[in-house]
Length: 85
Length: 330
Image 1 (cartoon, chains in turn blue, orange):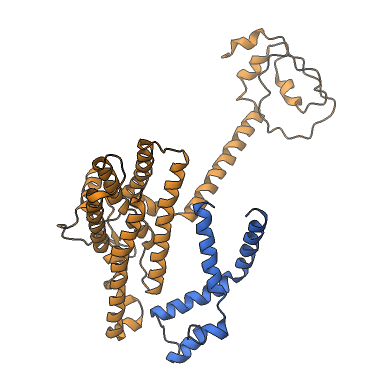
Image 2 (cartoon, chains in turn blue, yellow):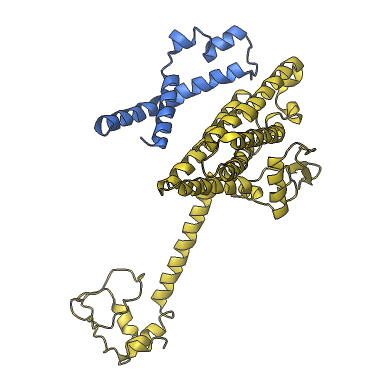
């Protein structure tokens, strides 16, 4: 496999790893969802800009944004691996 | 009368149109063949061209006043309009993808700037003022002063993209040249070396962007600045691999000469990046307009500042050293 193919696989696998995290079983338990983070810090409407809050936002947005495209990409890669890999 | 060879050709017998053509007249002139093309052309859509040909004259009189032909004029106008529209479309789309006027700012360099900057990247220890020079411009509304950074032509501390682009190209050629000295040259080497270099830069910029997002650093034209700064390490890499290749007699980097050069260029590049990126990653005067949180809690701001400083250090020293080591490997 070429170098760029490896890079593509790494990217897809990392995105999969973020998307596959379960919201209520795992992320809520370690306070990494936006809801639990706001509740635990109790800031009503305050503009929070800590590193943890930004990371939480990043995870949440990747989960919502990349869920549907990743299904397509994963299917394509699986088919490619089955046929040509 | 520029083509006298067509004068000897026998007169062409165009077929008489048998029905009214509905094909529009926007077409290229007929092919310049000297053969009689009468046969097999029944029902040709060329009725007007034949009527304008002088009766009994030869063919090239028709070609001589080809530009006066109204259909040809329409065709040229149509072609020009289409071309212009295509150009506009292309320009618009390119401008949407990359900001061309912002990029031009980065290539506004002079010879003395390039030499001084190269010297600065390789020997940053004695350079004193690291801040970029700003110029102010009073806006059209009056009273509203707009600050902008001077282009690289006027300011040595300004990032440019000329040196990074040129050094990446030089790096790719140098690597393939050294492979050729060892007798291992393949044409694919250009592609693979360029891929590794560019992917390295993209990953580095991606990591920087994520760091900036996590640390809430926002700055104008930051991405282009970071792209420019991430390309300066190729200067050190080029010096390392070139000089160590000469001293090691074609055995690649290694030995005490190679490692000393690598450590030196790595430290120089790291110091240069740390000093230069300070204004990007540690903006000082932006604190007032970033929201009420930072002005209200100086403790919070101080903690954030130390986080940013650590991030800057981690980016400048270990990450750069790792990337330069990967690039210097044979």
